[in-house]
Structures are given as C-alpha cells and as structure tokens.
Image 1 (cartoon, rainbow over the protein chains, first blue to last red):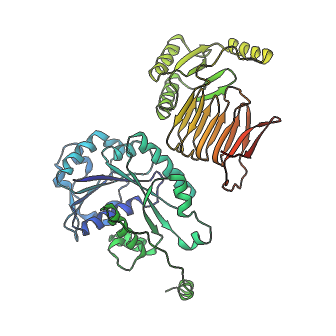
Image 2 (image 1 turned 45 degrees about the vertical axis):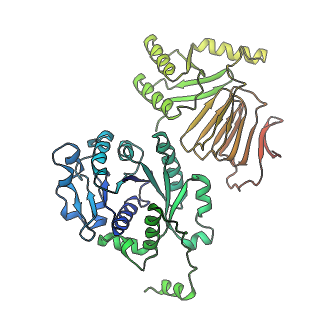
Length: 262
Length: 210
C-alpha cells in the first residue's frame, strides 16, 4: 500500500525542502521505494539538496505535458538505489502544471513506489493547490516563531477545506537554549494553537547547512542531532513508536568551545 | 490585499459593503472567494442586505443569484430606505422586524483557524479553539469551549445584552453590539472560564463558574 505525502508550510524558509530530502533518504535507507516530486516550479532546490542537479535530463513539465514518460524523467540517487527524484523545471512557472495532471501522475507512480513525497512551494496559491491535490496525508513544517505558527495554522485550515484530514506536524529549527530561557515558543505553546499530532521536533543544527551545501542530507550523519531527529521522524512515519528526543543542557565546556570556536 | 467586499453587522441585520470604486467583476470575484472560504459557516437562510445605489439592475440580479447558490438571501435596498430604517430604529428603539434565526443556536465542533470566518444570525457554540486571525460574528451569544484568540463579535445586530464565554479568553478584539475592546499588549493565559458583557456602557470581562 503506497502513501502520497505532501510536505508543506505556508511560510517560506522553514525547511520544507530539507525535510522532504531527509525523509526521502531516511525511507530509502529502510529499503522503501521512494520518489520525491519537486513542485516548486521556477525555484527548484530539492535536486541541490540531494546532489543530483547535474543528472537532470527531463522534468515534471515534460512529463505532465506528455513529452516523455515519467520513467525517463526520474533521477536515481547515487547512493540509495531505491530513491528517485522527479525534478521540476527551473525556467517555467507554477501555471505550467495543474492539479489534475499531478493526480494522474501520482496514480501511475503509486503502482511502483511505496512512498511518494511531494515538496510543496511556499504560499497558498496555485502551486500549493497543485501540490496537495493528490496527497493522502500532509506534513506541515513550522518553526517556533509566531509568524511561522500563524501560517501553519492557516495552511491547516486550507488543507481542511481541501478535505485532507490526515495532517502531521514537524517543528523545525528548535533552539533548546532559547526555549529553556523562555525566549522561544515551546512545544506546548505550538500544540496549544495548532492542535494536531506532532511527529517531529528538529533542533537547529549547523550541520544542516553544511550538508545542504554538500548535497548530502543530514539524516545520514550519525553524529548530528538534527539527523537523529529526522531518523526518528522516518521511524514514526513507518509506524514505530519512538519517544521525542531530550535536548541535553549545554555543559560548561561546550559553552567554552562555542565561544572560542572549534 | 485590498478589500472590495466586506460583511458588516449593523443594527438592522448583516450588511454587505461594496467598494464603489471597484469594478463589478472584481467585486463578484472577491465575493465568490469570500463565500467559498467561509462556506458552511454562513447559516442557510441568512439575510444579507446590500445598498443597491451603485449597482445596475443586471448586476443586482447576478449578486442575488450568487448568494442564492450558497443558500443566502440577498435583500436590496436603496441608501434612503437604509437611512430611514436606521432612523426609525433610533427613534422607536425597536427593530422593525424580527431577524430570522436570531434565537437559533449553531454548533461548530472544530477549531476555527486563521483566515476563517464564522457568520451567523443566531448564537454560536464552538467546541474547539478560535485561533488568531479568525473571526466569529453572531447575532446572539458566543460560547467557546476552548481558547479564544481571534476576533469575536456578539450581538452583531445591536443586542447589548449579548455575552461571550470562553474557557480561555484571550481574544485579539471583543466586540459586543457597537462596542469594541482590544486585548492588552501583553496578555497572559487566563486560568478560568471568563465572560465578556456590557456593563455601564463598557465591555468587561469577568471570571465565571461553568
């Protein structure tokens, strides 16, 4: 039974694409057949995060307009043989794809893959409507920041209107130090407003930036806290019951290390 | 975003306010998205009045048809009759006619999220939260079994006896009849159920036992 998941947020820059890439790699590492679809036409990034930019031959628009079959447009990941990317066009815009085309494409992909993960563009306009059209379930990504939570709330409302009731929450870029000192929204505040099931709490981690630049999602990095958080999310998607991570208090030496650099 | 179309609660019912400078096609489009976005929330049979002065006959028909499609009734009136009615109400201190559904209660068992709007002639019971950025407008009372963080307007037709009750009352604005109260800039989460009502011409909020 395959599952179509859309990763969305409303606000830009909260980590939709990062989350998509990491969940994709995580599921592939568990030997699931996964395809990631980038629907952020004109502003594609997912290929960069996976380090697959130079392998793209055809894109989503070629497929939806019937120029090539989807099999030709899929780009296989260099390390994980069960992970595929369907990139979008960098030159066209979001009016080039419509919801019906995505639904048709996903019906075809469903026969072959265990998970179809759709990376949604920011905003609530046509690009968003196209991205969510085929989804069975949605992952809403937010940050512990008032504007991101507001936009997530709006997006959950919009998803409800589109009759997508299976919605999960991922809170990204948490800074445990700031939460502890009361300078950042904590999980209780966020749950209070959004009141949907949370499947992930990802700490802010410098390694996310370095791994993004290198094109290797942070989830494959054993020593990274964010990587561990993403591995937990993947486990929860597969139905495992994993408790949320505790963020250890920063010790005196860690602080020294941070102040004087590494 | 410019707002060419607005719903306003007035003394004599729900009123549609149109921007005179906007083109009819813009108005029609915006009205459609607005009705679409707050669908299920307008009660069937809600009467909406519009001042028809600036509209052509065919435009009036188009609007009436649009409203009819959503189960709403559009009542056209000229500026003069509207003014006359307002005056009549002020003079006689009694509504010229009974608003349909004023004593009905609508129950909504989900969270009202940012950008959503609930409009109703009667009273509203919400089993869920009212989130920031949302609006609840009722002709009667509003009872929220959850946290209220949005804008709530009870007694939208001028009923000064209307009340608003919430488990946690922390709204952006409270409006009762023609009065508006704004939340303090630094608000703490209330610990008990509270009620907002009008006392000596002012909106007050006080704790109650439920």
